[in-house]
Image 1 (cartoon, rainbow, N blue to C red):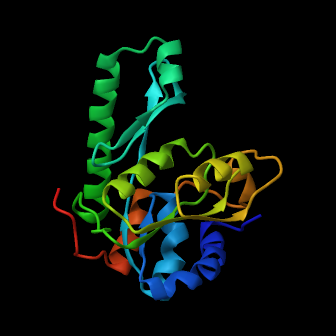
Image 2: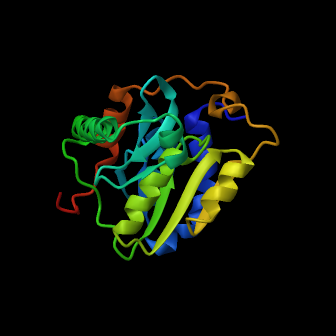
Length: 217
């Protein structure tokens, strides 16, 4: 069990030291992911930015993910659920628009723009505070691939084995500190898992200083 996201991030940074000679770019998933990524960015001076994938939920049950989307409208959908629940294309288009706007709003709030680092021919390390199904993070991975990253490493403190097996097929390497035999949700493996606030994210962004090398929107 991890004490908190800071503790998990410190432990994760030890495993990520091996990439320091590759001059990687860290893409942290806020809000909790930036707290987890902090030690790695601070310790090795890696270039970094934020990436925010968003879940697209079913109309009458927000817990069911029918899709996921990233800033550049890279998306994936669960066609099985869409067909089974008879979800209209109008609803999907509306949700895609709303979630894209929410991503832009959050990025502008956290760092003052909605751009992200040029990852072409770069090693990219995606960091979050944990993964459950892995569905939403696949949109981020797909987006990074579209921007021609040379290598993608996914680094998290905890995730279930079936999710790790799935994600290992679509990235170059997965680093996960703890893969429990029975998974009960990310928060179960932290003593303290309070929600990270917007203010905490903004303060970390200001302290670390975000890179100015960007992709034009």
